[in-house]
Amino acid sequence: METTKLETGCILRVEEDGMTIELPSTHKEKPGWTSLSAAILNGGLFGTSTTMHVSNSKTPSTYDGLNPNPLELAKEISQRKGCAVENTVGLLTAASMRTLRTASRGSNGVIVDAVVTAGISNSRAAGAPADYFLFGDEHDDDIRKKNEETRKMLTPGTINTMVMTNAALAP
Image (cartoon, rainbow, N blue to C red):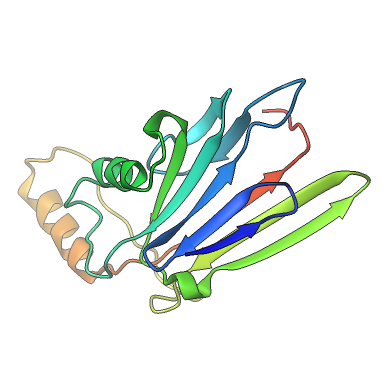
């Protein structure tokens, strides 16, 4: 495991099967953290008054995003990594942790750290056809057939970007 202390004081731990960022509760006047994400686990606007973890876990490239259930998978991986589910934002990726990159910038006492993982085996280009699923009656044979065809064509592809700052941001 490779451990790095980021400029914001957050701790980045990288392993072959994923990465975890520990956001320690160090602010005296307003302890805790707030996140805004599209994560499968605790996504949306989410906050904690204690230490928060962000878990970006690697799935096999054959993972279809359905089996096992992605929320249950994110919970199980977070627990295995020693993160409390109620204080963890959990993401899933098929990207190799070898693509992980970090950057830090600061000005006038405000520090921003960025951590990015990107899958490059399923890259897309501007103007490429969009992947989509049809909504409607799940028992409608036409909709079910079209969605199954789409699912067979899809391969995992993610760019997960995590940005931390020591500044208090308005929600």
